[in-house]
Image: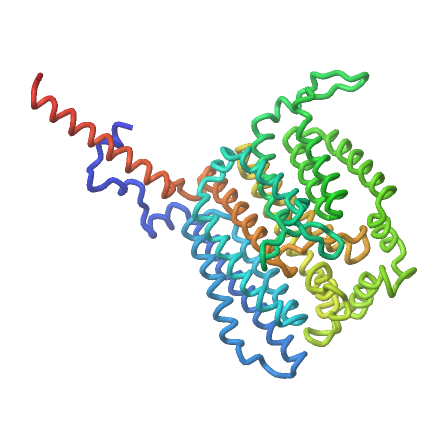
Length: 490
């Protein structure tokens, strides 16, 4: 500390500064990652612009007049995000942002294909989402700082999850009470609650993993952790039941519950938690199926949508027809009939993509999610801090499980639930929350890269500011002390 404080006052920040050439020499791998990311982003923009043009040709037989402005805006947003990553998270994984950009672009093209008015709103949400992505990367420069706000995030996330149940605020849309209305603005607080709760559980399990893994409480032939350390999984189960019963949202209940079970399994490294989680969720699902009519309806149309193909099963039947029409290569952008599927821009956008891009296009979407999940899990393996490892696992689980739930429901693998396809479906709440999630995942990836020496671990702006203030205070104290010594005893 003495060496730092004794530096020249006019060069307070010089030791922390690394020039561009020196940075490239010290971190060649990180530099190549950013160049690879830039190339992939340009490719994603070209694919999106081409798809936008082809869809317009297929629908109106003309090139859209604003194509150049669209391409310029698209490239500007993506390049802006890339340069922020290059500045504030230069060691982060190079595939996460391009994959999200590709999914976002394809989703925007399909929304434009389905509804021009919604496409205009989605373009606004895209701007907000990427801006929030940039803001999170700039503000959260150390992922471990988030652990200090665990209880604030827990109560905030729990309150947000239950907010739609408040009379006068919550509203029911399409049978699910997951919306909050504030004047003309409608949003889903649960989209942000999942991130807050993922951070809380990562921090909680990182601090208590050994206590949870220990089996010091004997119940008959079973040896379990102390009851107070079992609370997280019980709270998780309670949240799943509350969401399922109170808000009639099967997708969110499954997502939240899976998130908690996976994180406690990774924290304790005990497979038994997976079995316990499966039993608890199975019990809750069976109870709901026997007690609530809307759950019985979902299961019935999953087992046999053709029994009421013009009523309750109409949506899933039309999506299956669309996927069948698409075949291997699809009908072509702008040449299908995805508007035959109700709410195609939300729950069934994957069916619209499968119809016009075929099995090849649908597989490309699936592979993009698999690559994102693979990148997230690789980030978790690379970091050596428990909080960051669990946070990366939790955020990756949210993306992977959410994609599985909606795509599995569309192809009738599991009962259909009302949930959005990350980065693809229409919706401002979903898009913004997913970009927040992406920024946090990239922050953890960058942090892992710094600690294993792939890029210099330079002080953050906040750390530099704190160090500058400290040095300034020390110099001021020294001046006062020197002035007193010169004045002599009073």
